[in-house]
Image 1 (tube, rainbow, N blue to C red):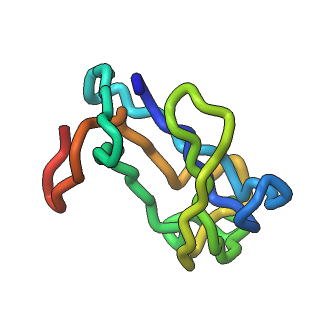
Image 2: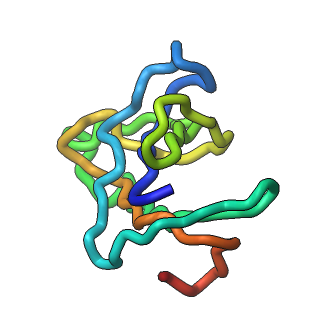
Length: 112
């Protein structure tokens, strides 16, 4: 893998689920690296989620998201993560920022 996963809030856990708001912005703060995974190995990417309530309701168009849609870098088939978060339905209130993939498990409080 190389680069950034595609991440967005979604209304359902399938291709039929609509994207909610705008997809995650790619943070250039850390370099992209190639991650080669052996069978059963783990990789991660840090996702920053802003607080929807920090935006005016008219700008945000608040909704509750129950899914994250995640595309591994370079892939066209998504996986889904169940959650319940306040999200913005508007594309003018970006809440998600993604960092490039890294090998191994992410550790709380650390970035690449």
